[in-house]
Image 1 (cartoon, rainbow, N blue to C red):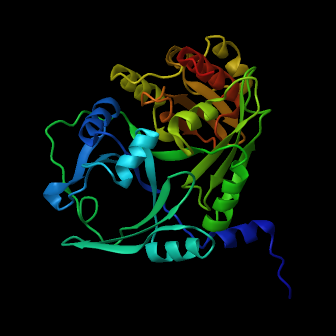
Image 2: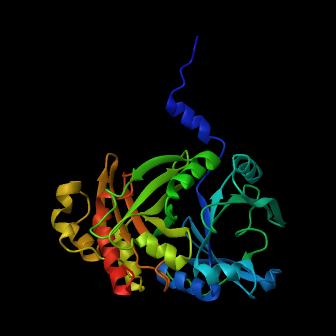
Image 3: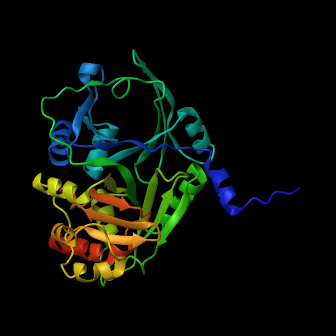
Amino acid sequence: MSTNITSENKTATNIDFLPLSGTDYVEFYVGNAKQAAHFYKTAFGFESLAYAGPETGCMDKVSYVIRQNKLTFVLTTPLRTNNEIADHIYKHGDGVKVLALMVEDAADAWKQTTSRGGKSCMEPTVLKDDNGEVVLSGIHTYGDTLHVFVERKNYKGIFMPGFRKWESSYNPPSTGLLYVDHCVGNVGWNQMNPWVKFYEDVMGFRNILSFDDKDISTEYSALMSKVMSNGNGYVKFPINEPAEGKKKSQVEEYLEFYNGEGVQHVAIATANIVETVIDLQSRGIEFLKVPDSYYETVLDRVGSIEEDLAPLRELGILIDRDDEGYLLQIFSKPLEDRPTLFFEIIQRKGAKSFGKGNFKALFEALEREQDARGNL
């Protein structure tokens, strides 16, 4: 009896070689980690978790680890010049260096990805202390960004060996941020498809959504995007590249000021976007605003929603729907003086998509900011 393997089954077979449980942490290289940690605690509601530096035997850098629910950020700064971290900050400004992914077997993750063409940045490395061991390995991705595979099933400590618990009397209340929903990368001209192929071939991801310059365009600028997802959907990486337009697109502005390819934004999930955004705004986070006219027709497009439209309108929260449900989303202004890294706050009410219906209004709002900076 013959067995007919469908393309769906083939895809499932192809992605099994790199099972991921989600995002372990996001590491930022920053000019002053102490101040950055204070900012993220104050503005976003993170709590102190762990610290590494000279006091723990790390003589060339310091790292502060902060956490909110399942969302973990590592903020790292160099203590001297003439090293990779200092050079990264000089070139890019503050930005994302590592997208760390949870795995059951970091050695196998490294073997599977490097055997398929991934460029190693860290061979499997075992870190040990009295609380057990963490195994790390890693590969390069677009720009200077890294994927680090983290295996912590045999570790009971606060974060990982080399870190100590960071006690602080200053721990502002949570803003309701839950976990990383997705991370978006900006790549150069004609580089989206090569990086899509990288995620397909090296990491077993699949392209679940594609947007071309007809989907993502305004009167002045355009971009293209493809969403890459691992097998269980826990890890999603949209990849953007510029497209031809009358003026400079947001991706071109990013590439110019970041001096290359990198993480454009981190999308963070919340269970109540209205409460979260009100809280974030009260702490000083600024968000992009779409014209009020957006809300005059939005319910005609997306249908009925459970939320009252008035607070969404007042806060500037966008709404979109797909076959699975709807989503609510809003985008911060850049968190740095360079117009590079920003954050998205997203609440999914069943929707699996990324807000295609909001692209035009969102990008027009971005263009107003670009124009104010003189970069459009």
